[in-house]
Length: 127
Image 1 (cartoon, one colour):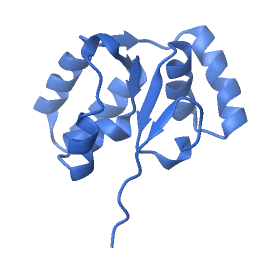
Image 2: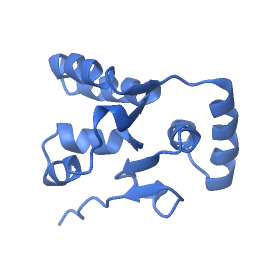
Image 3: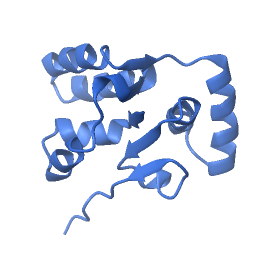
Image 4: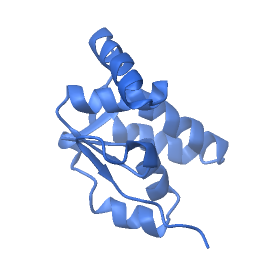
């Protein structure tokens, strides 16, 4: 199982070279964990970028993956993880969801680098 973080989705959806490379690491829909928080983050980004039609497509696609709402057990795990790794609330929930489902986390966000179960792909440094 794999949870694709919003950062990796956004790289792909924006058509960046990194996003195209990341696509090869995207799982099949049956093995793709999508927290409802990631659905919200993606929709927010797509609407802000005036890509409302794409937002509908992304939500439709993600709805065929393993969609995971936040439950109490994951929320409590996220609280512990946030304190342990000094992650934001949203990142704690995303990471806790990956751990709860024994999934790895594919991300481009540096603050996840080095954490157990994380596949971190660095963004190129801008010149």
